[in-house]
Length: 188
Image (cartoon, rainbow, N blue to C red; front, side, top):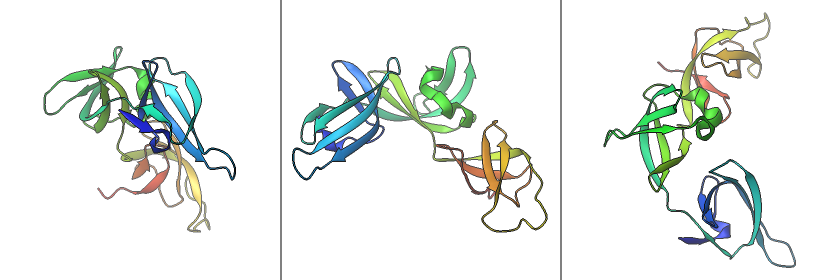
């Protein structure tokens, strides 16, 4: 399916010369004089090579047909990360390079969105937020009660983040899966 270059967004999958690429960033430029262009940063799915392309804003780009399917995370072993479709009970294994840095946030039973192209999982999308326990953090310093002050902490998955000074080890907190940043204390 052809779309114009200016309609591409982060996460879209495009087909260039028979190879699939995931869009990392798409930015349109409208100079005062000349033709408007769209610059697209993308990564080839097969081997991870990054590339940049520049198109006229109205130029057609082939967008790959990708199906978004909800899967549940099961476990990780030597073959990769295993997921199961809750409706059909089909299982799929993803290699570590597809999961990438997001692997730290995977929890057993977590619902994720897998992008399926011609029966093969090519990308994964985790929920925006996850709840994790703080394993280690510094004690609060006396007089450090300003609402804007933060201190370093290590989460149960080994990821480092910054938390407010009142949060102590053993507290469950909600963090963003994109960058590990603190959102709030968990309600549970």
